[in-house]
Image (cartoon, rainbow, N blue to C red):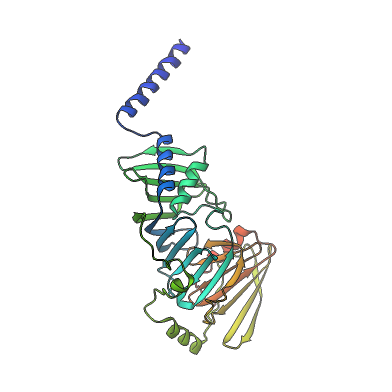
Length: 343
């Protein structure tokens, strides 16, 4: 009797598959094949998206403008509602990988394999590659979307192990991405508002010169620099998460155009936190070189190496260094620095 029940179940399952096929429903393998084909045939894309992040103390929102031209040209402009200094741009061209802050005339050059070194929730090819790479990916369909749940590959953050990716049924372009923690809470959400396949690009669209001149701020960069130099005001801020450490020393160093504050934290794990107002000197021809990964803190982009994380926010340069904090802890401390000044 048990064998008969198993046989009947298999027959029913086979009938369901036949019915779905007859109705034109695609299987998971069909959709993966179509996604692969789309990547192979496209010459590039332009997309716009809205991203919300709940990885820090407060929710942060970004508008993202994404350009990609085969083979290895990328431009990702991120503008945050909380950063008064304009957008930051991740740029990859034949000269390397850069993070630019045009309004401050600052640039970093990264020794990194970005974007191939991990999951990127706003890059189409990264999403498709994550689907292909995960043999345990699950699949479902709605009236409008194909939905995959896959593992992620974040080198610097193991707290975001899964993602849910929605692709449009008509053209297989991304619609929505939710990056999930271990309890299936969506800590990062990317909503694609437009997606254009195979657009036309200008020859200099991925050049340093053009992108360093593309400040989104209403005031000219030079005017902002003069205002900052005149004020030279540095409001010292503290991280809310300190991994059990406390401030043991605060030193100030006078600089030509202001001051540098060095905070020493001691406790379960010791670290040093340095902050100084940016000296808005053009670095277009000599970007600061960084060996490490590009990390989104939720309010700005940062450069993460083995024992140090660096970032700029609202015209202030921050450096957090420790031989004892893990990379994830470095990120956690940095994420908790969101403009709360010392009283």
